[in-house]
Length: 178
Length: 146
Image 1 (cartoon, rainbow over the protein chains, first blue to last red):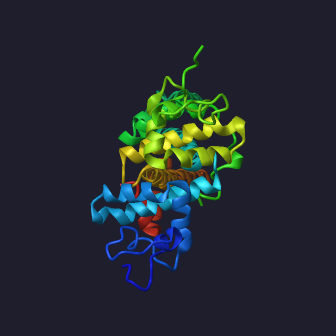
Image 2 (image 1 turned 180 degrees about the vertical axis):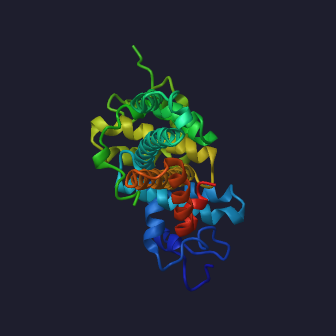
């Protein structure tokens, strides 16, 4: 907490007196000036203060952490920020789901081959895998996510506008998703 | 002839100059876009950020900021970071699932190899005893299939 002698990192940067009930002090200790500097650069101190004030105290620490994460992402990638990372991760999810579908088709074939009485009714394994792959290729990224969490649905419907132009996968997101 | 102000200048109640940095990114027909971005980042911050980006990328940057601002308004504690966490979780779960199935495939392939290596034994009998042997040797893996 901010005492008369040691202002928190925010008040140090803003060059003002750190009051006892300073809203920033619990989350921006003076030994980590960079943390507040980056959040101030992206969001601005008054916006951060406003956001924290609107939250119950027990949620503020998490809010600060996520703001710091977002600010770092935006500094690393000034054009796409976190949105770049999200796009990259969505692609990974899609890729894995496709691999899963192929593997599931393969195991289905193998299991059916172990049941000789059923063997006569099995379609050609190649046909099963092509069917699965076709199904997955037809599912747009957005369609996939309609089955998932509500907020991904929210994201997908509004991300279409930038999605087509996000082709620079090699330039964004890699180091922040490690 | 008076040209229409961009959404940013309208919101800030000022004149919209012809070289306004906001107008390509915040057209007048979408006031919501600037309103959201202003609420989270502040107008002058957005201007500063856009200035640091080459002109041809500014609209995409504004769109990304809009998305992030919307997510932050929707979830004031975690914002878009909540989505990132959830995606990491999905990836992890999918990788575990994939590893399980690939192990199953390997198991069955080993099975087939064992049967084929003993061409004279009764196929069905050999199959079940091989499975029992495999389960006895590998109780953890076998329990995945039950």
